[in-house]
Length: 399
Image (cartoon, rainbow, N blue to C red; front, side, top):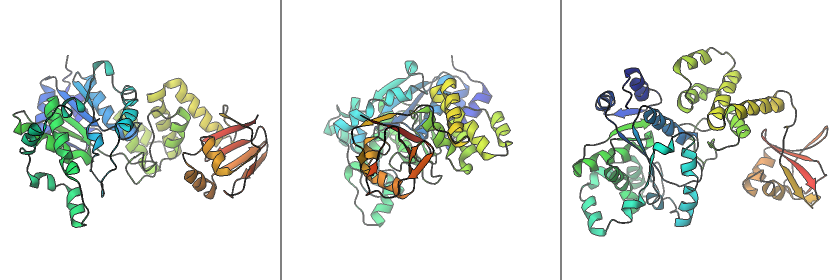
């Protein structure tokens, strides 16, 4: 049964929406109770989904909850090319092994938001691996050079005398044809995907299908408050981050993003957000936001625990209740090796940056010592605590 409540339809088409194309047409289809096929595609270029991806997934869940068919398309074929959107140079192609590795957890993570029992999960290799050269030529005849070359990324690269490959040039055409293969009625994607999604409308027309309507979703700013959330920029919050890490990252957000995150990243009602606006201290607003986001992905119990742990460390200046144990036989340890081996940094370069930024401390009882020289070995004692930033702690066990 399709829910055609006008208030609900208005909310779907307004909250967290950049643009709806063609809004009147889509609103009419939603209002008459037609069960629509809603497509969302994502290339497995990384191993985790973050809150930026979740903004689109939450909109999909709204449409799923009123009865529409969600299609979660994993672009395992197009990931080999790489979406040129927003890029000033060609993307390094991914290998089959990398793609399969990245795909492993996509379904599981999407299932934290969508009811996967009712989702049509598809892979675009289903049709692209079967398409022969003749069929590909037929497809290419349905799109003009001027249509594809009009995209800003290509125009900019041409103006700067930077090459782009024929593969990249064809990427919007491939994504557009995915809509033909899936017979999609609506496609949802970030505002940066508008060109590619509109290409789907054009190609559907050429194949005699009714062109899909479009919902674009605003890009979510990352932790730096400037660039869009991206794993490559390191400014992201993964939807599978540990509760305490997720809570702490949200508490580090610039104050200017609090209400935007409430609107885009939560299901908190507009009425509740109006009340949250009245909370004078931005830190208290952020605490409500952090608890709500952690609750969405980890449940009420772990959200409360994350809040308690955060207050214990930041308000009460105490150590965490539980810390990972790092066992080692070494009593003298090069700092960069220690941070990397103990998984307190993702690389030795990052470890160096952390030390130079004054973000690494050794705690032993009441004694706290900042690590200032990344070249000088650290003399470890059993029970030492290594603190990195405000959220990462390990306890040393000398074996």
